[in-house]
Image (cartoon, rainbow, N blue to C red; front, top):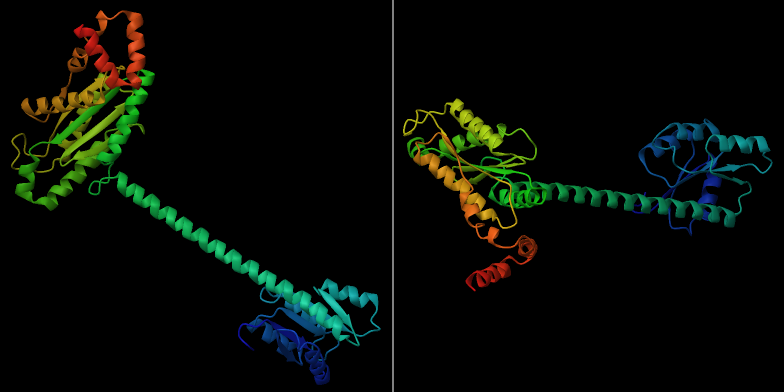
Length: 370
């Protein structure tokens, strides 16, 4: 058999017929295989691929009908088209029987070369179209697989870019995006927003004493424990940097934030991670600063974060391993000028402030200075 050519199988027990059929089809671009027995034909079809089988009905050993039945009973050969070659005096009952066992077409003897070539060309065209569709389907499947793999890689890269490489919790970049969105939601819905900043006490001394590998293990344990202290999907615990962590709690008031912060402090203490160099306890502890706000149009997110940061440093000054609640005096002090402005004018200023904060600041400075 020639590689790259379409194969046709002709089955007839008479050598003269085989030579004649082969001669009729010699102008067609295909590889013609001839066999003289049904068993040989079936064995060959199980090993090789054929586009078409020309099958004489009346052959010895196994007749054409039985060969066709065995072909259509096998997954390997049941899709191969068959053209039966029958005697000219065949009755209609025999013709119908051929189609019952899967014959696609039939020819009556004596064979006319033009009709034989015409029928064979039709089946070869169908075969080539089928192979083209299969090739395109395989190519499409391959492209889909590549796209799915690419999507999986992109998801993995996106996950890597949003998570801290050491602890596996959200990183500073993800936190920055989340707090900006949460601030806008709290401002729009006038709901409380709470922030908890936590810092491992005397962590530099821990690293110096136990080494950075054990220090990394400590950070991982602390991160997992802090995350376990939040209960809602909307809450986020992120690594803020170094040994600092931050928790953002949407729709959470001061009371709820203090409860979560204290739960965090207790959870780290219960880990009982040995820390001989600690100036607070014999195990690893954390200090926490808490801030809570229902943001108003004139409030700044940076000021809110600063309140939590100042509360954290206050907790450290007060002895560490404690929770300190920050106050919003810093934010309120910036709004003391508002009561002097008429209510109607204040509403106008607040609306413009959201769109052009810088220009409004300049306008207020000019009004107050006049």
